[in-house]
Length: 139
Image (cartoon, rainbow, N blue to C red; front, side, top):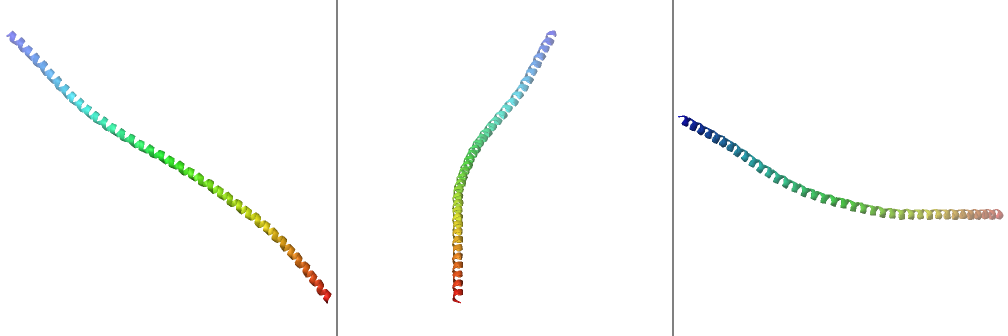
């Protein structure tokens, strides 16, 4: 009977060990499945993030290209505007010089006409005086 009790105890201990091993294996399998699920989720997230990064980099490159193009356009427009301004300045300078010359000529012409008018008045006054003198002599 003692042998039976010892054997029964050993059997019970072996069953307990087996149950513990079975429980541990079950827990480890659940942990393993959970870790695999986390790994898959992390891989999917990594892939998604990588795609988003690539897309963002592509977008940034396009924006950079557009920005560079716009800067070039702005520089070209500025250069053209400066050239137009220089051309306008030259034309305005020529216009002002022409008008100044016309004004000088008009002043000279006015002075000449004043002289001519003065000479004509003097001549008329002299003629009138001669005529009056002749009229007096005739009377």
